[in-house]
Image (tube, rainbow, N blue to C red; front, side, top):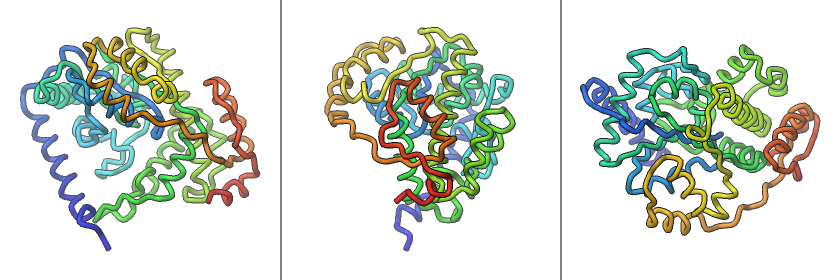
Length: 327
């Protein structure tokens, strides 16, 4: 039986999209200080960090404004949520004058209406679109939060299995992987086209619960590596790119948040930091067991070592067995 919230979601999202489309035609909106984009594979702590910074007196925070992005360019609809049949990767050469204008208007209006000086946006898709985002707005800055891959993958696996986001009229919508697994199929196709871990996607015969752990590991690998490699290729220095760790955010929120304030150029906000210290005051739980096929584990282990994390608790099994181990 659908809940009242389930029944209201179509109205909510149609209203949000219509509002964004109307506002994109209004001839005002400016971003004098550019934008800061919060990067990271989903379940890496992007929401925890974003919601902490949302309390800052000088920062307007936008949490996954998918209606903005779809209005700016339908190719951003990587879940096929609005029926735009979007892409995962977008590069600087994908920017159009129309998209640049809509971007400035929508995010500039959000800044003006908030009364804040700085704008921070968080959306998991951003990590595959850094060149595109940088070309959309001058003075773009990027904060990348990294978390132990074991915790990220188990969290993706858990939310994939629960899949408790219901949307009337979209029975094929998966909370994590999009409509009819559109996000996954797009990731597979584009990674093959770009030569990114193409052979490893063969470990997933079809998307679904028996393969969620492997799918999560591949998504994490692609996103973390693409963010770091793109930053290096574009030659971003410390004035444009800041990397933080989730475990450091939990253990030392004051230092991490102060560093982000300095990076953005925002004034120190003690109340924001005090609130964040209370909200983030919990120990980092040890990652639970994760089962991966041997070839996927090899790449996973390489990345874990590169990032300074362990592979303890990761079980290496034949692909068919890995599919069956997830509870």
